[in-house]
Amino acid sequence: MNATLPNTGQAGPQDRTSKVLIWILLFVIVACFLGMAAATRSTYQQVAPLPQQMVTRSGTSVMSYADIVGGKSGFQKADLMDYGSLYGMGSAFGEDYTAEYLVQLAKEVQNNLALARYGKPFDAIDADQQSGITNSMREQLRGIDLSQSQVVLPDAVATAIESLRPRIATALLTDDFSKGYTGARALNPADSQVLF
Image 1 (cartoon, rainbow, N blue to C red):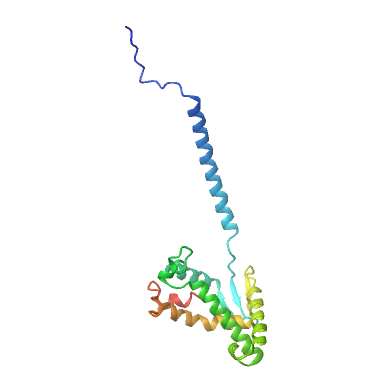
Image 2 (cartoon, one colour):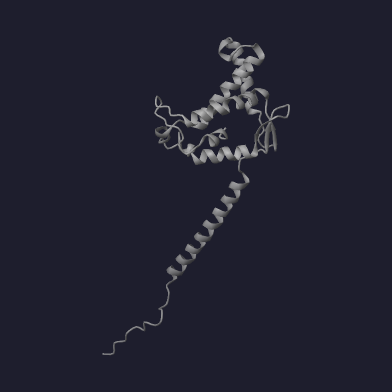
């Protein structure tokens, strides 16, 4: 009997299926990298605009680029974006700060418009007047063009931002056990001032 042992130093012929699978794998890897590169490029091209300055109609600065970037940094430092999250866990940590501040801004603008137009706070005017003020508030907030380098804010909005800034800073640092929320421990008073 002549038994021949295979030569272990040489690779046997590769079957056609293995070659096809290797090419498919390489194609998928290259396609994934190209897809990630395209998505990254698209993300950076479509990033939300950051104005260099927000000013009143008279030219007084309300907020600068540094204020906006500092606010974003503080928001991330305190991990406030996870509060009120889409996954349902946020309410265990605290309120949805973005939504809360937008509601406060809208109410403050309504109040400023009512005071300017009727000389009374928003809650003290009748329902027809409130409807008109609410429509004006919406128009003013929607009319802010953040794609400009210098954004001119309506007076009612600029005043609202200025009055809300210290209140929000204080609220972020204060425990509110009636709601079950604690203050943002990662922020110091200086950090909380630039958040809004």
